Amino acid sequence: MAQHNELGHKGEAAAVSYLESEGHRILEKNWRLHGYEIDIITTHGDCIVFVEVKTRTSEQWGDPESFVGTQRMRRLIKAAHQYLLIHRIDLPARFDIVAIIWEGDRCDLEHFEDAFMAF
Image (cartoon, rainbow, N blue to C red; front, side, top):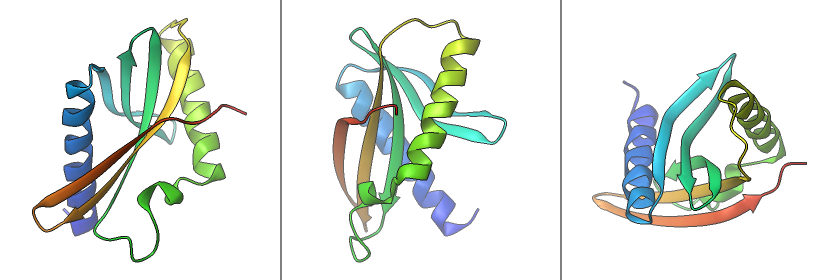
């Protein structure tokens, strides 16, 4: 497996552990449909939460969360819409970002709740 893929999987595992510790119930990891992907889907309180995880080894090129651009947001929103339709879920939806900097054995994780709205 390529090094960047390993880093991504490591970051997603850290995000899952963190979210569970914060009371999220994990529904899906790496959910895919027709070229769309959602890293993590959870329920938290009365919301369904669609989580994008961005993992980097440094902030040299910017914060990880800054790499979730408008195009990625639109794709997440479309994927989330399909997920809600397929599973007939009628809950308020939220889009979160978990940004991770992984330096050696140390992981700095930041959780952005309600990071963006569906437009």
